[in-house]
Image 1 (cartoon, helix red, strand yellow):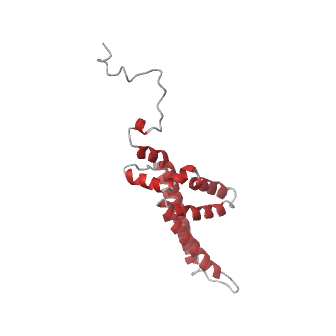
Image 2 (cartoon, one colour):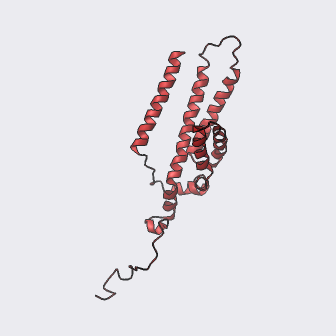
Image 3 (spheres, rainbow, N blue to C red):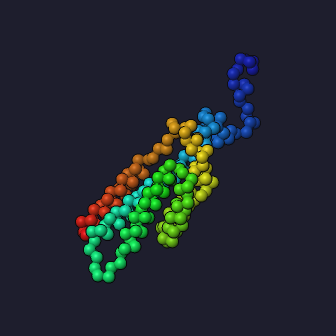
Length: 188
């Protein structure tokens, strides 16, 4: 069989360097798809932080609403809580929507909240350190860039798949939070 009859003769070279897995041609997709696939996990993590901030906003607003129903004794000064908790809750909501939409401005309030959260040693330090990494790392800068939003618009078919275990834990966490809020309201 001559080389012209063998279609694989030119393609196979045992001395050729291995292909780069980040090369878009090797992935069988476009350059935008390669970038999106490389940053998809980071994007999902940032959006998850947005969901946590949304929960924090709900808890702050619920706690401020509970102050209306809790009887206050003489000399109880909670006036600042009526202003502080709803303000924190609203800022967390706005930040959550910014994080979920990958808006660059959301990095500033997230950095401030996470910077304060570092004081919650040991668990708060670890969680907020990770959030700071997500927001301010090189991948975080890319995920919050205008170029990446254009890549998302070009690749709407690429979706992050959450595992069933994560979904179960999220459901259990939400059930626990709901149970705690109902228990606090029933007790008051």
